[in-house]
Length: 430
Image (cartoon, helix red, strand yellow):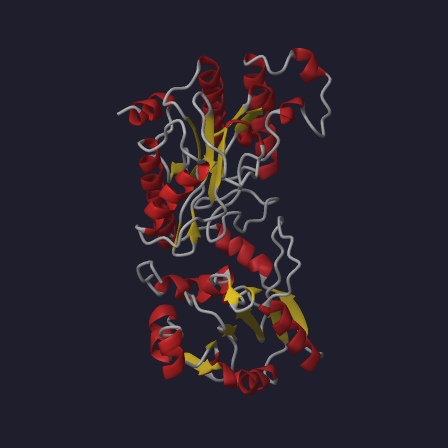
């Protein structure tokens, strides 16, 4: 891995928090992701399933974590099953986790090779009553591919049909949404790497560069700072492209007088950051661009203040909508009649700001969190309002990542990344 080793006490604590919420005499199983094929012998780069990583720190394919806090034998209360390494694998693929290294990474003392899984699993299944299934119940989930987790669940259910079934996901949704200080440090590192990439671009952008040139500059800076690269597919949208919310082609030339909306950020140690900035290709915003930019920034600043313990996500978005409506009226994009006659299910402001303002962020860019429950301290949210004006040929989005505090305004993990129009212009023209 490119990232520095993570203190195993984080994963020990995460497992302790998870098992404390399990039913008596139950087990929970977590699988690594598959390595997904492209065609012929080509494979996509491996990305670890965030749940097994959260609970063990294991960042390797073909790994299984089994938790059985009430196991009669102490050695079976936490078990890792690992792909057995050998000289051939070491030569062709590199060193895999040994049992000793797995303990250093996870704090789990008991490790078996995968060939022993069925035998050990039979033993623990004769001793437990309930099995926790690790389903994906994220509110944005839309998965058609059968995962390794899915196959494992099918296998054990067919072999042991009399066991009770419970769900891991509700427990993980709550645990993962509240960040440990170690996690916040990792996310801060991701944000710091993102800052380096953004500052690199400010001295690079000029009329005539291509969107993919900017993507390449960012990737260089990210990887050079121990990141795997982008936390999500980068959006580098110049001119009218910014009005396509998920524009990812990044294949157009940046023209004089246009803006570039960049929604792009680094990961670090599997933790995400999520940044949006909108900068002028020529190094200076036009009068109209600046008016809209400042309006978006005001919405962002006011929205940030509302991210406090006890806030309900849906209510928060209603209030942000009111602030945005006021700004759109001031910009002349809406008039009073638009607001008076609006559809409550799709308010007038949605014509120019059609996406949400905030989402959880952490191990996933759109991270775990139960949105109907009140916000809590140490949750991390994005704040990302935008105004998109196809008729004027530009769109503006501004986004930071903030940590909810017990008291007062959230802590901005991206506070050092230039955001004021004057500072951006000054840095671009140095």
